[in-house]
Image (tube, rainbow, N blue to C red):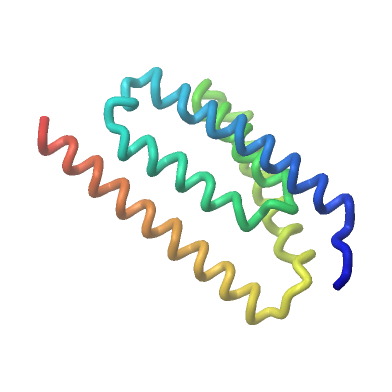
Length: 135
């Protein structure tokens, strides 16, 4: 069995570190707005972030760009959000092209991640709609 490259393991560790920081920042933002009472919503956001970032463990730039995007969104800084979106696009494209997979598997990865993101959106819209209807 072939030994994985050491730098890939280092990148995975750094992605996990950024993920921990990102989850903490998301929880702090949700707590500030009083959403922590809705534990299912908080768990869904944190689980969704984790599920989105797990396939990109060898690419810490994606997690870092999402962290910067969240910071820019929280601060209302459009320039920071624009830079983060540009960085996210570059990192996703680089991750896609450097995958050592066939085009078929790459398309399945993109399809499944799109379906997962759409499913999370539907879930969150329904949860927010139910919460607004209950008020």
